[in-house]
Length: 199
Image: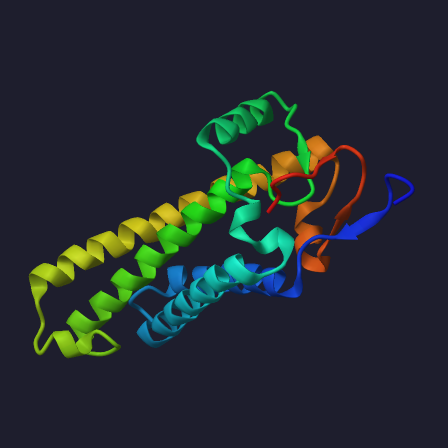
């Protein structure tokens, strides 16, 4: 690339479709809760399917989609967050260390949320793939799984807010629209980009 205004393709179509479908599915599931159980359940199954596909793609996908490209040591993550707070964080072409850690956290939190949701669905509604283990309602286990389900749903929402804040700060620091890049897949290519270990 000859100048700082050139762009390079970073996010493949799967990563972009996964990202926005997950955003939509999570907020649909969060706002429907038990009031619209069918929609809530469908959104939950969609999230679980997306997680499974993302894990597979994280192992065999394109360079910036692979887990090996965005996992960093805890020390590197801490240093990056500190530099971000001082508005001097390095620019990464792919996901930065904090972004990589956030993705792992979200995948774990969403996995627990969906799996406990399926458990609650099986216990309280005698429906879904786990219903075979519950011939009648079990209020104790139902309450336990529901508490875990609600905690991780709220924890995921907190992670979303932190993620959005991070995107805004990074966009300001490096003067680029990171939301747009997750739509068209392109980012500015220049010599200031940190090339190794990117998500």
